Image (tube, rainbow, N blue to C red):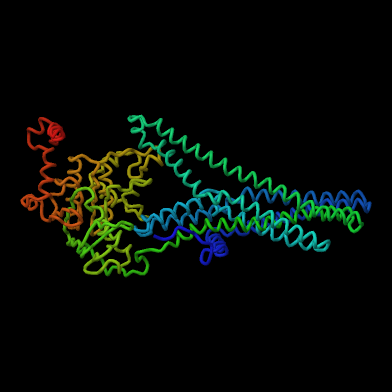
Length: 627
């Protein structure tokens, strides 16, 4: 597993990360660069007007100039300061309009990486942790990905102010500059160490926040509302949430104590360095080397010079911390892939429905696991074949599907497409061979038609209607107020309808038909349905997948009897293989499992009299439980 430690050097150094942000601004919204420079210039301009305003007015008074000239000078500086501050305030209030698009562009790149990266990368703990840190660095207006523009503006304004004030003070007494630089540097080094407490304890804070957000989300999760009320766990969840809040409060108290000490120390050091600078200027004035207006000018400049020095060091320190956070974003976007996406070979022609997929001598273990799920497994999916995969929980049924679909590569052996190792192909081209409905299928917040068409930008509405009709859901959809334009997902749209489990399955069936892939995969999509509903759904799939290569996974053996071939997985190998009838005659594990399941079902008029249509005999189930 890759190291989780971020180092500020080389590729992800402060300078390179700063260039990264500038490039993002040029791509997304260049106005943020000009606004940042303008903000810095306005701050320096305001500082110079404030610096020279009082001394110039005092000098005119000393020279006894006319009232008109005096009022004109006062008006010039007053209007200038007001105008500069007004423009600065305007830019401050509108800075988000140019900065947010840049940050959203970065978030878009992050999510594109997450949505398109290879399956092993997406499931690795290193990538998951990196994504969490990158999200923290980019979410919110105070995140480093947006706050860094304030840092750039601050560094620029402090450098400009430092240069101007340095030129001004060296013409009076270099000793003041030397003393101020030493005192400011010492104060900065001491206070920055203390003020870095929060950054050094960020992992502890993140753990506390994660626990709090987890329990908070569980408390307000609509899907858990029934369990919370039935089992009476509301008070228990409340206690856990209170403990998380108390942990947050304790952490914040420790942090604020450290920051309070830093503030007190900074006040003491500021008093010391300003006292030395002011004392030296006062001595020069008493000796007659400086006039009253000059004393006021350099007195104010000495204080401002200290602020510029501290601002430069503080700005670069802040930029260093923000750069460390930006490293998480850049590492996420540049995360090394394990599959060929761009450089892989394109699939020659259109395999259509005639492709053969073979698992040859495949051994597979998940990353970090010491035991293998499969060992030297051999399996071939022939063109147009309907293959059923059955077995106990943990036998490796879903893992087999992941290997067939190319989500994982074997630890040993190979997955072949028409005799060619799929590792040589562009993996996204290989993915296009498959249409699938998984147990945890995705229903996204969008229109019905968009969900059926898998959010294809060129949705063919006639084809959508045809697929929905074939799936047996046409009447339901057309009966909705907005029809095929009805929004789904109640978490996002308040007027979204609630579909039953069977209706959702039919919607997924329509999506599968719309994709029209050569190979169709059904990985226990009906696990939440009762036996009759599952049987009906599978009958539909059987009829609609004619001529297609299909792989069906079901924990109910009766649902797969229509398949051309059934394999039973057991202990990382294919224990039995054949048709439904052949496996029953074999009298092995498949036959025993089928016999156990069939005890819960009776057929004929007797069953309908006892249980209604469907024939599930609850009394037999209860008797079996008692046994």
